[in-house]
Length: 233
Image 1 (tube, helix red, strand yellow):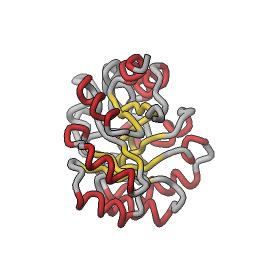
Image 2: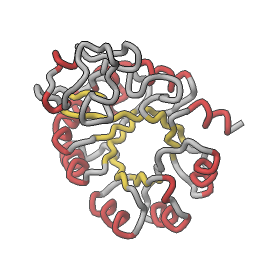
Image 3: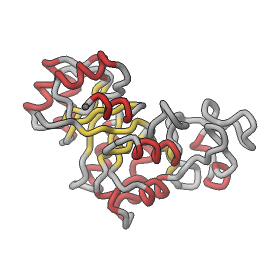
């Protein structure tokens, strides 16, 4: 059985502030093969890396800007935000430039899909070509498939059932990403029989890791890539 690739979920948030360049650097130092990040579209068309739709949860209490929806903010506004003890919120081109590995790039809102496709199409950095776009939003993945037909896409689902697999097939997805707590051997077999990769999220306990491995996961997405790497030895 092939050893699954390790994906740093939002970098390595077990050790550094999520979705910051410091977190992504930590994930690489800890042995991640790929980096997972979340993206949103800003009001001026730039693509920012953050999980939530607003900055409210992650902004430092002493940040110059502590509240607001990303869709209403500009790049200039975002430059005033500090998260995780003083870190900036990066834009997607910054991570594409900095990363020596491909991304699992999660589009959080369908509105960001076209801008993401354009950035990946025009980026000169190898990380862009090595990226897999992932999303819970079928319409976002449809845009990526139409704009970049050769770029891998993986459909995120909360539960891996027949309808989820059917939707992934309809999208022409290269992979399916189920919540690891709902992962079953049956579902894993169906995904692999359909010729798709199995990319469960988010694996943070020994039990979850055992399930992912027993199901033949192709990737292991975790908040702590170093822990997953140690478990291989």
